[in-house]
Image (cartoon, rainbow, N blue to C red):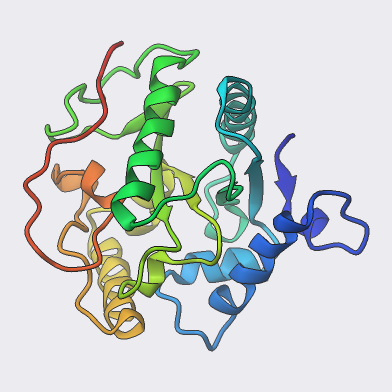
Length: 245
């Protein structure tokens, strides 16, 4: 497998398994106005055909090794980004129902953290300078191949928080961390952008936005935002990731 561009996936001659197209078919009504989906940047990228995809058929050693190789290739290409919002290519990592299936939201989140642990344990690059090593400390974020990344777990088990349910398969929505700092950083314009998205999330989901959503540049906890709950109860749990590097 490799990184697959949106136009290839949705084209008439795509040769991959049917479930790959199911992922795109599930995303389309959510990311196409007037759906009201909170993240306007995702909608913009989907409309422009700029979404990249990695498909994970199996979550065994071979499948995870292929995922790491594909992710490293995506991040190497993302490092050449010109800084313009309209050219950013977000990544969807889609897991087959064989690779990731759970009975409840906690089960999907557990799978997500197991995958992130695998990335960390087999990271080909040193932990970046200046990034905290404690997930509970300010200015920690997940890193891989020398790049800070933000990972959104989207699972079929989300019932109330519809913005984190993107269809029949467990998905990671992944971006290099710097993109958020550029378009929604700790500036007046960045704060405005974040507030607009959070207001849209509350309207789309029918419940207030997840209280875990914070600002990295203010030093607020990052890992909580990867997998949010279906309610707004206070979080007290510890990060499942074991830092070993």
